[in-house]
Amino acid sequence: MADAMADDKGFMMQNYGRAPMVLARGDGAWVWDTEGKRYLDFLAGISVLNIGHAHPAVAAAVREQVGLISHTSNLYYNEYQPALGKRLVELSFPGRAFFCNSGTEANEAAIKLARKRAAKAGHPERFEVISFTNSFHGRTYGSLAATAEPHYQEGFGPMPEGFKVLPFNDLGAVREAVGPATAAIIVEPIQGEGGVHPADAAFLRGLREIADKQDICLIFDEIQCGLGRAGALFAHQRYGVQPDVMTLAKALGGGLPIGAVIGRGQWGDVLKPGDHGTTFGGGPLVCAAALATLDVLVGEDLPARAERMGAVLVEELKKGLAGVSAVREIRAIGLMIGIELDFPGRELVEQCRAQGLLINCTAGNVIRLLPPLVIDEAQARQGAAIVSAVIAGAAKERRSA
Ligand SMILES: Cc1ncc(COP(=O)(O)O)c(C=O)c1O
Image (cartoon, rainbow, N blue to C red; front, side):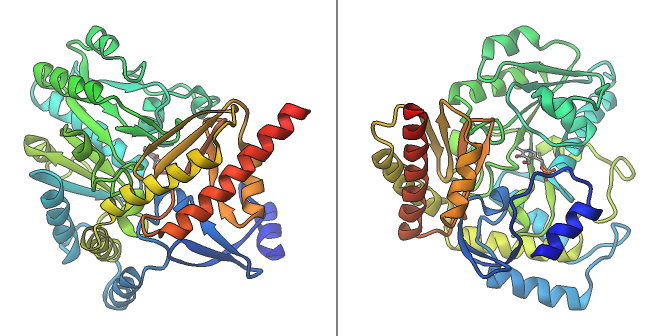
């Protein structure tokens, strides 16, 4: 452990604020550090290990595929890429898929697709992308420009042109802002990094109407809230509102890096050979892993489990935090849970870790829980008990200070 941390200090760019621990292995909702200490993982690699760590089905698929062929480039077909596209389309809506390597790349591709379609229709002046306050869409320039929080952009300017940020859940603002220059609206159905803020159903329905009326591409970024976490395989299914384009990443590869863009109907036909691409995207190794991951998610009905376990967790949290006035709100959809405090939550992350629970804090004062969807009731109760005790203890200390 000392070596990894010393080498990181000496040789790695210091762009992460890491906890002083080295993770060595995982199993389901458990992870172990190199010293053998076990933790209940209520962060799941930031919503990546939805089917749990080291799932045997993914491990087997990867092991087999890596010994056959791990990379083909996109100059040739591989067996798994089209199969994964078919599976995702069948599970979401009729259309076509494109695969890349991360969430931010998926959003880049979605934005490019929206602009390309406008240009092909003879409207190159339609390039504007609308996004919302509190959103997070990634770190590359297009996604970063759509990411509204200034601290992500600071020092990296100028941002690319053609991005406009509007207040989240404010349909009136969207109605006023859209016009002949609008190519796309990008929104997280449930904002993750921004502090677990679900969109109002009426807001998403309204965006759908506006996009239909004005021929605007409606992009749902389901990179964090998709793939079962929100109690439905895709968050938009829960809302009953279909996007034109959906972006996925994080949990899709069961721990391996993959991003996906699904274009509904005509939106799947926009890109032609040479318009967009990637060397690694859609390789046989990650696609085999993603197919195995989807089999587990769907086969074991993990979205329904997320809903059930989410309810257990929230009930326990409510019990444990009753009367703690420092808790402003508990927001939860499935197993995407945010506990908003009236004080900064950073230190609480450390305190939970000391007690064997991994969580994080986002937006400064929101304790965020994103456990694997495979957790059982005992784990849900155990995690909730630690979080509640830590929050209640910190709130008490602040009152007496
Ligand atoms: C909603 C959302 N979109 C996009 C991204 C960016 O994904 P990646 O880090 O894989 O580029 C994230 C990452 O946290 C996210 O939560």
